[in-house]
Image 1 (spheres, rainbow, N blue to C red):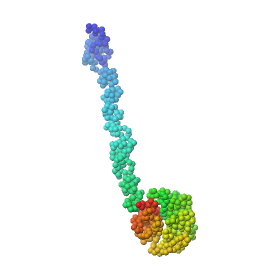
Image 2 (cartoon, rainbow, N blue to C red):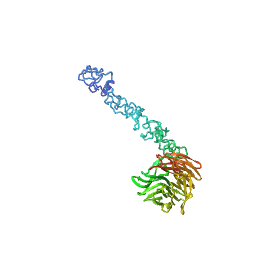
Image 3 (cartoon, rainbow, N blue to C red):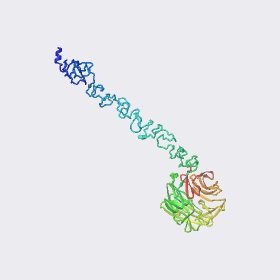
Image 4 (cartoon, helix red, strand yellow):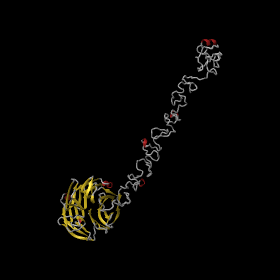
Amino acid sequence: MFLLLAMTGCSESFVGPVDQKPSLGDTGAPDSADADTDTDAADTDDTDPADTDTDPGDTDPGDTSTDPGDTDPPDTGPYDTGPYDADRDGSWDADDCDDDDRRVYPGAEEIWYDGIDQDCDGNDTDQDLDGYASPAVGGDDCDDTDAAVNPAAAEVWYDGADQDCDGNDTDQDGDGFVAEASGGADCDDTNAASHPGATEVWYDGVDEGCDGGEDYDQDGDGTLAPSGGGEDCDDTDAAVNPSGAETLDDGVDGDCDGDADRPRFQTLDTFGSTDTQGPRIGEMTGYVLVTWLADGMRYSGTPLTTAAGMQLLATSDLRSGPASDTWWEWGSGYSFDSGVDFWADDDHWMWAYGLHYGGTRYLLGDGYALATSAWGNTGVSRSTSQTFDDVELIEDTDGRLHVVGCDSGGGYLTWVHGSRAELANGLAFGYERANVLSDTCGALPSSSWLLASFRSAGTLGTYTYSDSAGLSYSGVLTGWNAYDIETLLQDGEIVIAAAEGSDGVYTYKYPDAEVLPAADASQVDVAMDSRGRLYVVYIDGARVWLYWGEPASGYTSVELDTGLVDADDLDVHVTVDDEVVVAVRDGDDITYGVITAY
């Protein structure tokens, strides 16, 4: 039964234990039928280990044939263990890391991170070969396609690549704030102490808070502290700096000039003026006006002859310099005498001055109407070569203006008075009195007095005036040695200030008087604030002093640093906001300073 089955059912598919993996040494095709034991040397395809021939060319130890054409490698048993390729992928089993899977062999395309080493290089987890596995297989290489990116790589900051795989390319110092280079607000991403909201350490050169502010300007007033090369004497108070407001009696050096009560002065552009007179100060709504006269000036390159200049200071910001300027020209043939005064309101600007033209001297009240931009004047003329030594302009309680001029050579005391409209339209009254050899003069409108100083005699003459009688001699006051007299009528108060050389400066506010010390007082001016306190400025040699107070209660003083070498003339004005403005001239140069009264 067995033999029958072997012969009839299996002769085409089974020949016993044969090589199941073709040997490279056998040049013949597998023979599944040849089971003979002959010694035929022509048999070149017998791979049957049951072949028992004795052909010496057959190297198969299981093959006993002697067929020299049989080159099958040695067989150690019933199966041949020599080089083979079971999965028919073209790679021998010695190189093929999985010879049961024809997708796996050296040179195959690797499918990364699938758990199969398709190309048999021992690596399915580190595509960029940087030694770090991909997160897809539990590693920490955040970009396994770039060998420059791995946990040990050096970070190149702000380039959009996370080279060291720590999840951070925008915050180098690790303070939690993104650098400006990456669109954040950290102004110094190398310093963890520097970021928005950090506590500022002032004056260390580092902007810890990243607010863009200057590290040497703690109060943010725009002026650096001394440690940063600036002049802010109190960098914790924004109101204190070289441009700050100085306030009298507050003990604070608001403008950092080294004195708590001394205003800082700055230079005014006088347009290259020559033979300058003034300055004089007036006020209108929104502006303080500083004006002067000059025989010549040059405005924006244009030469002017016998002209007036003006700088307008905004009352909202007096310390920041002029807001605008202007000028007027009389032209050739005219020349100014000594002495000028000025008055202003919202309707008119009024100058009082002496003028020579064609051998005639004029004392003029010259008005400019702002509404019509028209000029008009009233004056008294006299054919004389004598010039005025002093000219004063004062307003009385009725709103009328009084112009007083005097000279020590010709001996005329001259007076013009009228309303603003009358002066501006040539309708005012004017009178003269001869033989009054005075070099300084003033007016006391409340008493209908004119004052004329006779310095050589040490007396002060008084003259009454009226529209009907003109000027009449009233009497003389002894013990005066006045070089300059200024009078003031304000809020019903009568005020007089007189510079008297080495005798000091006489100040009077009804009914009290006090003399201020001086070695050589030559020029003086006085103003009063809304509370009735006086401000007296005067020239003492080359020095300029400011006193504030009252004769009845005493004064406080400070020497002013005007920035000038000497001083020839000055003026003081108190604004409606109680800002004290002082202007001083030396030759053709004018400076001004501002101090807050309270």
